[in-house]
Image 1 (cartoon, rainbow, N blue to C red):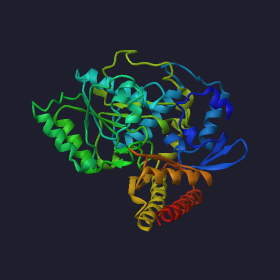
Image 2 (image 1 turned 90 degrees about the vertical axis):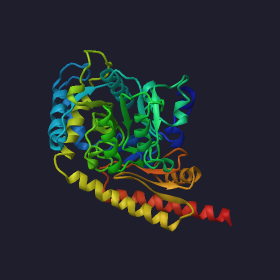
Image 3 (image 1 turned 120 degrees about the vertical axis):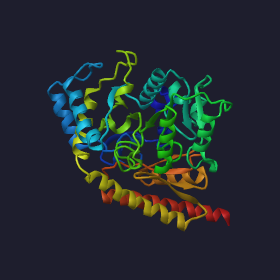
Image 4 (image 1 turned 180 degrees about the horizontal axis):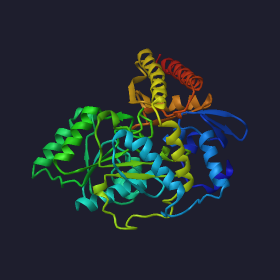
Length: 421
């Protein structure tokens, strides 16, 4: 541990919550240097939907490496990139009747968001962006401006501008879309006409707040009526996390742009893309670039993941079944301990339980870790315990994790009620 304390910046965070040294990982399991095993209900914050070292993806990657397949190629054409583009079109876009160009950005989600915001401003010749309360979009300047969390925002060191914040669905019982419409039609509202609206349909770091289908449809209509682009940030909620490949699918909307990262690479390898409607592709060559746009290893595992898991509906069925099991446990906990818990949050396998305060949620996460499971918290006060296991989890592994969670809440409840008495 000394080497990390001595040389690594204090900006590190997850290692503070889970102070062990991991050496190996497979499927839903992490293993330390000393052989301790932990169930992973964090999954790289949604980057490992297909699990650690998925054997099918690993085999595809090893075969590619063994033939000296190109690793780094800037944005040059490669057979690996062609394989990914074909898989994306064949297994994701065409079956959903979606027509998008693909922009390869720098390999992080925040860079995909930056690219989408830049393109929206370029196409519309406007600067203002509408974002939502409790949204999280990354920690580079443009994405951070659209992020609501004060902890992240205060790290910027300068004013974060050109964003108008609107209440997300359910925020403080305010009809944010009615407010948005009113401001758009009022010349004295002070709202500069936006280039785009940027949103997560399920807010991850913001506390697993869910936008209903009706709300998303209303927002889409407002954007179309006012010539405002709609950008869905599916970096955390996409790639099956909410039950469908894209989180917005149940609503029937078709965003102008979609940002994807985290699990799009399949294997946990860095990769990010922007899907954009063809008519928006007004970029000049190199106008938004980056050295690591061409992670060919990620293209290989991304394509294989789409081929294996999205060629039919079996994977979606599995996710739905897992979600129901988690939901049953959460709802039982809410009913059993109303003094500790408020409600279930999220949907699909982007799901969690809202606690009365951040102390309770933190104690639950610590107890889970003590008993062999990694799980994190989210929300304005970190009051939501967030279930984010790999989507490939087996029934027995899921039940084992849920048992650890239920034991944890029993332990916390016992301590809480003893303290109260």
